[in-house]
Length: 78
Image (cartoon, rainbow, N blue to C red; front, side, top):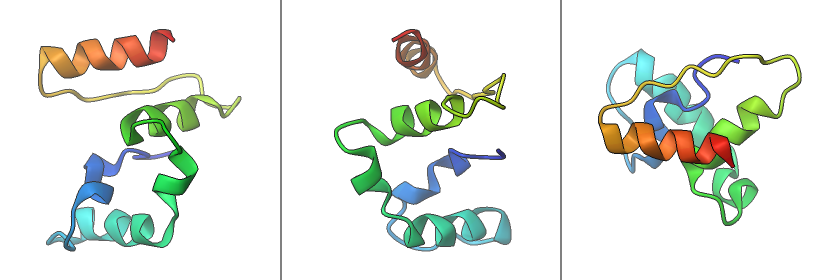
């Protein structure tokens, strides 16, 4: 599974420039992500989705701040 969080492009209202972001944005627009996530925040849903696959052993997550890192650790510890 590559780029399940896709740099959070699902959260953008308009199509981003460049193929790197535009392709996953178009895919995200076609999926009922909010409906599938239910009450879970989208980041938590995406991480849990990836780790629910028994063939996935590792989830690599970039972070921009200590708060994001702490949030990710909390989500994965639950």
